[in-house]
Length: 120
Image (tube, rainbow, N blue to C red; front, side):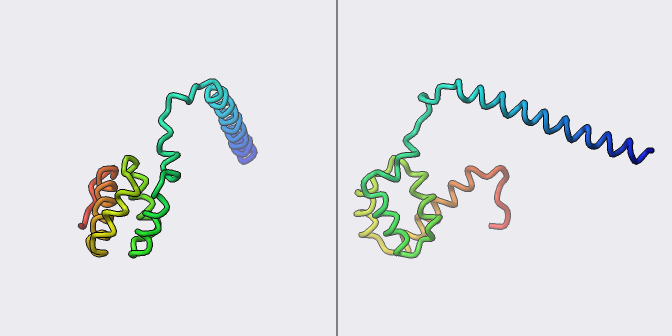
């Protein structure tokens, strides 16, 4: 009998949890449908279509910068003139560029880290 009561209590709690989640989701969807998203900046969505982005990305990958690191670096430099930057980077040494990109990505991670990175 005690085991039956425990099972009943657990199934009731699970049913209430699912019902609560369903009600919450529908409420959030209604709120989201009524929200005006035009005030948000969308520049970060369009930067990959800017002139020179793909060429600079390929250049960084060709000199040995990891693809994810290169994309992350470019994604956080939205105001960069990609064509002009590519021309500047072609005049610099490969080691210098790798160090620059890695240092910038490390700086971004350090700023965004919830706690200081230990051991470096």
